[in-house]
Image (cartoon, rainbow, N blue to C red):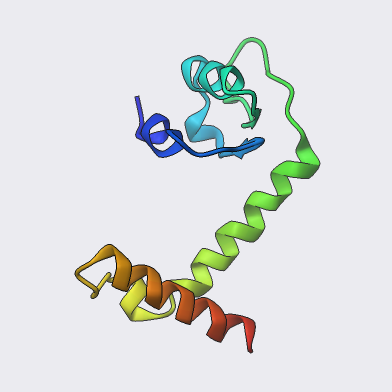
Length: 101
């Protein structure tokens, strides 16, 4: 299984949005057991397609595009910073610079 289970551990979430790569029954069941909604489209080869909120899934595109803009800053893309605290600080700084454009 992917690292998605560990990433979600301890995070309070009402909705989890992910792409088709995370379409597994175990992960969807785990998300729903936590009381959150899984907005994950089914793989095209599934016999029974699972319903998901298509409008809410469009929010994933906004996040993907924002990360693309963040990775234009080399320090974020190559992770020059050695500690997680310094890396997060530069992500915040780069985010501010993007918002000020």
